[in-house]
Amino acid sequence: MEACVAGSGIYLPERIVSNEEIAEALGLDPDYIFKSAGIRRRRWASSTETTSSLAVAALGRALKDARLAPADVDYLLFGTMTPDRFIPGTAAAVQRKNGLRDIPCLDIRATCCNALYGLQIARALIATKVARNVAICLAEIQSPWLEMSPESGKISMLFGDGASALIVSAARGEASLEILDILLATDGNYMDDLGIRSPGTEFGRPGKAADSLPRMVGQSVILQASRKVVTACEAILQRNHIAVEEVRWVVPHEGNSNLLARVMRNLSVSAEKTTAISVMEDLGNTSSASMGIAIDKLRRAHETKSGDYVLLPAFGAGFTWGAGLCRVS
Amino acid sequence: MTIPAAALDFLTERAKTVGVASPVRDDDLFKSGVLDSFQLVDLIVLLEANGGIKIPDPDIDAENFHSIAAIEQYLSSRKD
Image (cartoon, rainbow over the protein chains, first blue to last red):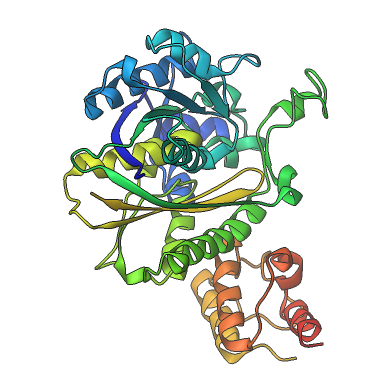
């Protein structure tokens, strides 16, 4: 049975934070932030917003887009690195606030690959007839975790807040994306190169102050992502017998626009034939949410044609990485 | 093993771009600004395309590529 992204929606916090606003605190030049990461501004949530409240708004829009009611959702997946609570999962909060039935609700913790994991699980649930309509919420409020100091400048400049939601259905809709394949991989040798150590059983509760802050070995992330994402994209295209020249759209999780440019070049995609959907300049790295936001941007641009192939590359802490392949219905 | 000409040309061009002298054997390519993480990705693509080797992901570490001497040593080790 086919599984299609039949609806999408996003929600962004109102507050826009420019490079100029944070550059001095981070000990950086605003232009450096743009040149090194492709970011001009990002959104930060207010103190009254929660990760689930962002997701609730995005899901409401996605359901409307898919022309479904909350009661039509059979299964809820929630991808986030910044949950409302340590326990229980944030999916439960969305189930209650969005008025969904007493359906299964599952949090996913696969960092910036959450959208791909969500699509893979949703496709499997539909293929096995466990569900007909799966909602995937992808949301982050990362700004409270950022250390606004020169010592943390090169990581704190990157992240923003936001939410996206996707409805994966057995039934096709207008401009829906048929999920053809998802390829995912993990190498836990790099766990310490990107992430937050504490709270947890390994580094304590709450643990040392430094263990509660985001940590990133930027060089390792760039070097490994540049290779592994390209390899995943090539592999998923090869096993589906699709040439890279046939890919019309690249819709990535984007952590750095320079990295995306390397991936595009090393994949040998043609700028004339293939368009990358980037949301980095205005939103920064919204982690779990970013790929869903980019998918929503693609669907709302109304520039897709039936049969277009869409490639979805992603890379995140773990490291975990992969690629998805969709076709516009 | 010597570094492929295309990779040396790349390093020379990078040196011109950042306004430093062309690197010699033991110059630190990162400290001089000739390489950063993104440029290293480009260098590795060139080494693979022109050196007849496939560099495994775990070897993608700046330590193996921080100078011309280090690159030569790494390439020699890959030929064993």
